[in-house]
Length: 320
Image 1 (tube, rainbow, N blue to C red):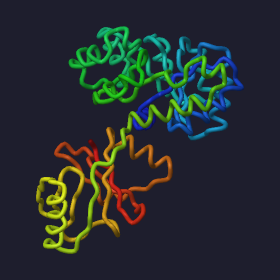
Image 2 (cartoon, rainbow, N blue to C red; image 1 turned 180 degrees about the horizontal axis):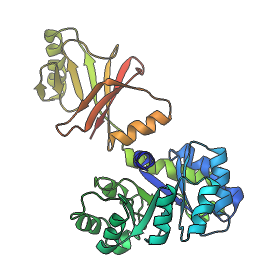
Image 3 (cartoon, rainbow, N blue to C red; image 1 turned 90 degrees about the vertical axis):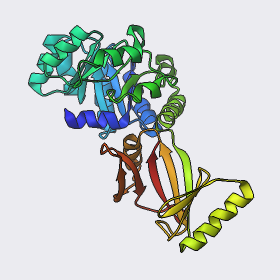
Image 4 (cartoon, one colour; image 1 turned 135 degrees about the horizontal axis):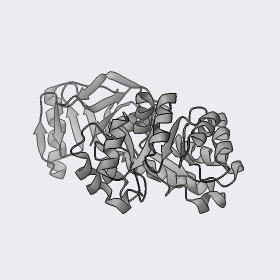
């Protein structure tokens, strides 16, 4: 289950979809995939769910598809047989959870109380769904309830939307958030797949939060770098902050004293979650030069360069 949970964590958002008509499954999956979320939890609240899962996994084999609202062991078998790679339930049914564990099926049951969390721990689980998240206390409740249980992580669902997504994902004990704001039933039923794609892309953009942090200018030596930095300061009043290999001018310009990566220089792109940003870019074919990776004192990645230049500039991701 560890590998699958890592994939879910890298994606960050799990669209929770209710499909009434099986013929909507493939265009819906296409909209999610092209919007940047190769993942879906197809709820077993309709008779079309197994057929929809089978259609999606057949058309998009790289898409991470799970079955939600699974209430019985019979539904577990039906979902896995259709191609679901993980099981999600609204509550913690020991019979269903034990059945999944015995079969080796990844399962994320819903919990809302410390007692249910202890029951999940006793069954050997490390990740639970917190549901319905906003109705039972939201992020403050997760933080308070998780404190005595350091080994448990959460996938909150219920009331998550574009406005509160980042606050949830900022808490390190949350691996991903389930949500339906980009895949509302009326959008699916009215076949507004372009709108779903647009809302999905907006959700991904908001989650990753790409921004230009600074631009690096390559100079050949310290004297030239100092002259360039002085020019920016003189013209625009930017303060200077000199380091060993570069001079920062204001907050957006870095002048390199002895060259650096990139034929013309480098551009730093900030992101809210560097791991998720890397996974997102890798899905688009981007490669990284891990020899350039830098880590903080806790061993967490804080910066890394893309393998290829863009317009003569080296580009590196920076954790905000």
